Every structure is written in structure tokens, then in C-alpha cells.
Length: 73
Image 1 (cartoon, rainbow, N blue to C red):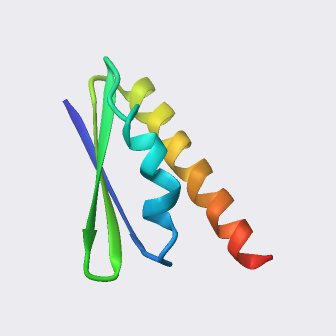
Image 2: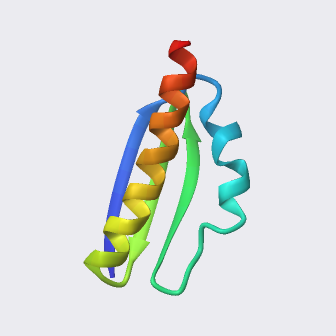
């Protein structure tokens, strides 16, 4: 099992953005959980292989990027 962790500062919107994703965040090869820790959001990611890890990391970072760009408008 391959594990990764992403920790970012919460802008108050991130949990809302990922709420719909949490329902489908578990797949056969990879999954992630989100925790709030003070002012940070922590993504705990697990995957069976590196291809699945890359896919789920891309999915998470795309949503984070969209959130970041929307907040800049």
C-alpha cells in the first residue's frame, strides 16, 4: 500500500468543495480521507499502485486549483 499526505491551509471553502467528492473518494485502487486540523485540511491518501496514486493526486489538485482561482476573482 502506498500512502501520501497533503496538508494545506483552509480558506473556509475547501471542505465545501470536496463534500460531493467524499461520496466517491473510495475506489478499488485508491482512496482518500479529509480531516480538519485547526486551520488546515489534511488529505490522507492510500493507493495500491503508483498509477492510481497519480490519478487521485491529479483529481485532488485540480479541485484545489479551481478553488484557488475562484477565490482570486
